[in-house]
Each structure stands twice: as structure tokens, then as C-alpha cells.
Length: 183
Image (cartoon, rainbow, N blue to C red; front, side, top):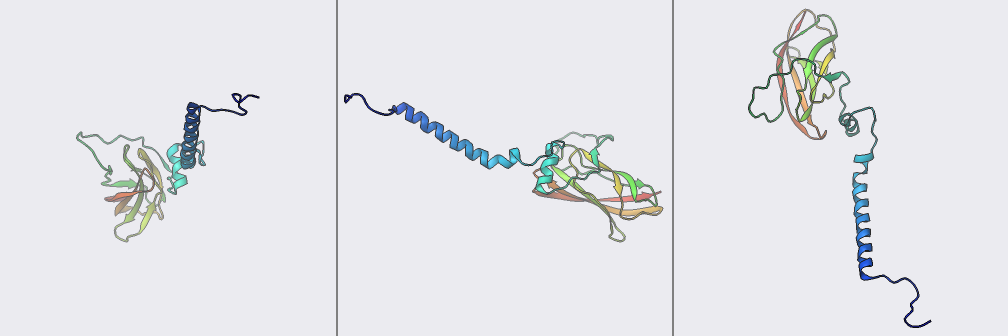
């Protein structure tokens, strides 16, 4: 064998650089995959929407009685709207002497947060209803009160707690004054 013939594999400078770049890209891809693995491939219920499945993994629980709001949408009066839209409830008429009643507790479409509703009687300070979280655009129609209300008018406060759509950041809530009319 002559000196010009070498044993083994010889690599050019170009081949070494290309190999180094490929190794660096594989390492970067592995890091990105590792960091986002749970976000992309974590436990997901295939029958739920993305918001619902991510809400169960982060700890907030969506109210099973909430559904798409089917009533008349509040009128947009123009202008720039920023922040959280809070619906008003001047009065709510419910069936007397029943715990299962119908009302519309709505989280307006386009809100940047989930709503949680609590109805508190003003006279006694007693909480007669508390929901789980409601997605923007959804509404709770079927409400189970902690106790039935006899015929009459009951001043109450609807306490609305909010949490951002990231399901981690609490936002400003609201207390909405109302009168429950049981008849």
C-alpha cells in the first residue's frame, strides 16, 4: 500500500460543518419537543373542546349546566369596548316553592374570562346558588337553589367571580344587585 492510499473514512470540511448543523438542529428540536410535550400530547378527552379539556387539566371546573346562550344578544351600542362585559339583572322571576328554577346567568360572548356565579340573599347573607365556571358565550338556564323560595320578592346580589382564559389569572369580578321574584 502506498502512502497516497489512506485507510478509513475521510471527511471534508464541508461535510463536518453540515454534520454539526444537523446535530445542533436535532438537539434544538428535542428541547422544543421536551418543553411542549404535555401541552401538545397531554391527556385530552377527544370528545371535549380544547377549552374544556385544558380547563380540566388546569384545575378549573366548567359548569355542566352551562350551554350556548340562545336568547336575544345584548345590543352593541358602538364605541370601543374594553375589559369584561357584565350583564345586568334588574329582576329575575322564578317559580315559587321550587329548588329547580329557570333563569339566564350569562357570560357574554367575547369576554376574556370565565364567569362563576353566586347568588346571595341580601336580608340573610345566605348563598342560595353557586355555579362552576361558565365559558364566554355560554349561559346557565337550569339552576338548583339550595332552598326553595316562597312567594315574594327577595333582594339579592349576584356575585360574579372571573378567571382569565389562561385559567390561572384571577380578574376583576362584579356584584350585580337584583330582585328575585318568586311567583
